[in-house]
Length: 82
Image 1: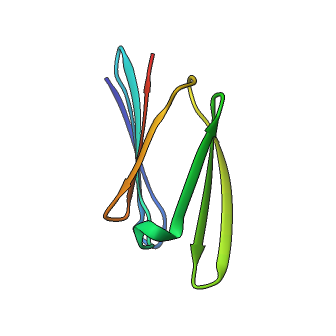
Image 2: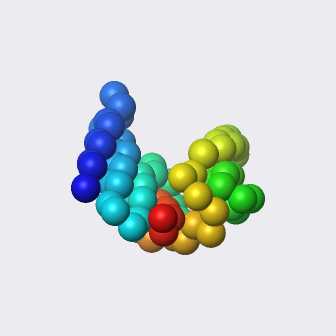
C-alpha cells in the first residue's frame, strides 16, 4: 500500500491510498455536505462546491472508471477498484 497525505495552510487534509486492488482518496472539505455536488465522466471526477455563494469547480483525473463517490460529514471519499 502506498499512502500520500497533503495538508495546506488551512490544515485541510487530503489522503490518497493505493492498494493492490483499490485506489482511495479522502479529502476533508470545509463545507456542509449539501454544498457539494459531484459527477464522474469516464475516469474524471467533477466536483462543484457552492459555499456562501462562491462556486468552485474542480476536475480530478482518476486511475480508472466506475468510481464510488460519497460525501459524509464534510469528508469526500472516492474509491476506484483496479
